[in-house]
Image (cartoon, rainbow, N blue to C red; front, side, top):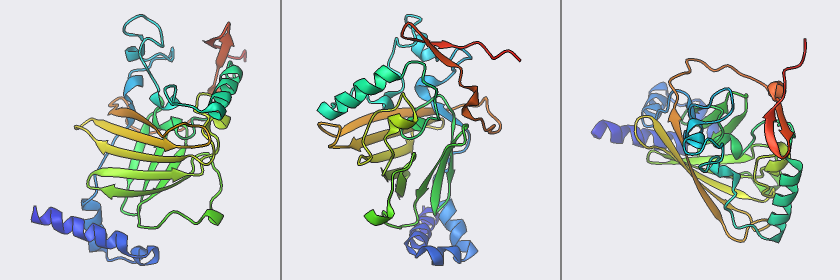
Length: 263
């Protein structure tokens, strides 16, 4: 217990230093800071998408009726959010244009709840969350504040500042470009939305996420969702893909898989 307390104290002291000072911190201090951090190795897939086959359907989603919508999946779509008039207008517009539309990527927040595996690379100064489509989020945990408003601009993954509360990673993200412009399955939050996530290990092979979104432009009240990932032992390395293999089609309002192009 005394060793753990010393490690936590060293980690706190390192994070409290200015960024430039951290870069020249004594090696022993950095080793102690690493020792105080959680370690989430391996590849993590959304719990409700675990075991997804080449059909694109997850076993959990098809267990009861054979339908891909027999149980709730992808909770970060915000289907249960309390949209205001502008939010409902955006939601209807996105749903009408989604059929057969190709994806540019998952983007944020959907990459946090997709069937695409994630990795968490944790250091004292930042945590990087990356998926197999080479999409990455950078969460700075070196004690810096959120940049001033004049130094913020909307991006696909937003700007994220994090902190550790014990073994829980707390992330605040702002300035996310309207998510549904990037991926048609995303909720149509505005660029002024504020996302707060809490991620922690719940057992040896399960990570949990609580996400609260505040966006007066599209929501009547803050919306909170819960998701989880399980460790997928089927991966031993990360193979980066792009979206040129998206063969999503649409027929009579249903998603289909288009035939492979003739060579």
